[in-house]
Image (cartoon, rainbow, N blue to C red):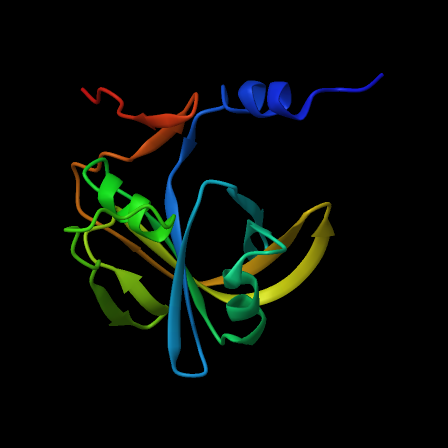
Length: 159
């Protein structure tokens, strides 16, 4: 039985995800990439995973960096997500970074995890990059995440 790739994408798009920006610095250059294929993996050791297309520029940064950050975007950071997805508007300002013990983090996020590259695994047309979490920072409440569902950004109502 052959499954249709577009139908798969539409179906998996029914799984709401948070929106993150992965940031890595290597050889004096910084690169960021919007990602929603991010997941917690292990508590001992603390590991998370990020799935990166094998053609993505980010992959070479993740191969060379000492640290990378996973920046969890707030609901008012759609423009930041678009910027790092290569869809910035002509008048959109560049997002700001802050130096931090876990690498470079984006300003205004609801949380950031600083990771050391841990392992890479093959995953079809993607690489699964495991990061060992070495630093965590959360913004104070209220925290309102940016979500992605059915091919678009969504917001949730928080009591």
